[in-house]
Image (cartoon, rainbow, N blue to C red; front, side, top):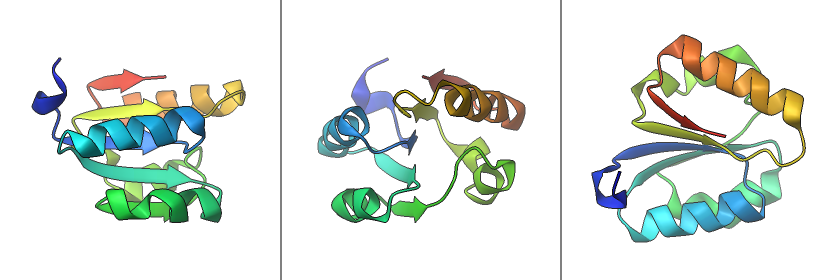
Length: 102
């Protein structure tokens, strides 16, 4: 899938990988929704996102309130927190997100 075909992308986790991905997607005109527990990480990328939230994406209510079901693609870049990645992916699947990268 070409980057230009992506429209609305949810990025969960703003570490090195998440920040690089946000930069690339932003440069290619994607609408970004970004979530991370770290306020400083969110501050660093909020200018490139249509919405940026300091929240725990492993909480099902968070993904529900972000309307995650409406994104074209979700990317979970939570680093070494394997259990959190599994929880996020599971909830994204339940919400009906068709394309998920983790």
